[in-house]
Image (tube, rainbow, N blue to C red; front, side, top):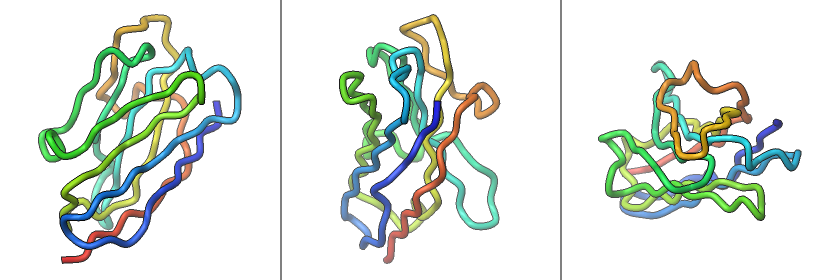
Length: 126
């Protein structure tokens, strides 16, 4: 599945942004989804994940309580609502998909994902 992330931009600390990720084929319902980010000079890291059925989610400790991942299988899209943004959230954000038959599982390991979109840049100024 091809993925396309959007919604990034330049915001101030404390502001909110909503990232969207929409695939181009209607097989979205077979995929667990995740968001990762990569800051300049750092490795790509896990941010949030959601199961195929949307019933279970997981977050990194650094974003827990501030970010919310969700999905709309009817619109074949997944979202990352980011609140109370901090300068350390500045990064390129990537959405990823993992084809799975297990509807309730989410995946944390970057190596488990088989579909990636281009990133969208989020810059948070202090």
